Length: 124
Image (cartoon, rainbow, N blue to C red; front, side):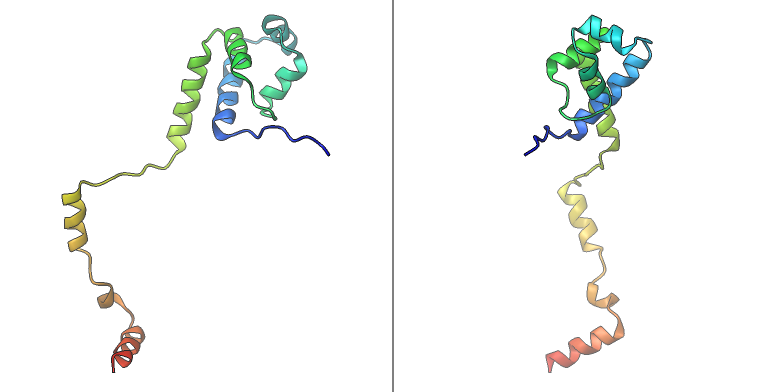
C-alpha cells in the first residue's frame, strides 16, 4: 500500500507562495539553495512546488534565511494573505440588531397569494 503524505493546508500553501516570491527575488538556483540550506535539491523542489509533505519549521527557517528574511516574516505574510481572502463575519450590537429585526416585514405579508390561500384553508 502506497504511503500518503501529510496534506497541505491553506496556510502551508500560502507559506510556499511567500517563500517562492522571496526566493525568486534572490536569483539563487536550487543547487545554490541546497548548498546554503543543507537540504537536497529534491526536497527544495518538493517544497517550492507545494507538494506533500509541507515544509517543517526548520526547513522554512533555512529557506527563509537563504532569502534574507526570518521565518516569522514569511509566516506573517502568509497569514495576512489568507486574512485578505477570508470572508468577514460582523456582529452587530444587540440594540442595532433588535431594531433592524423589528423593521423586517412579516413573512406572511410577502407570501404569494396561493400560499396565503392554502394557509387560510388549513385554518378551517
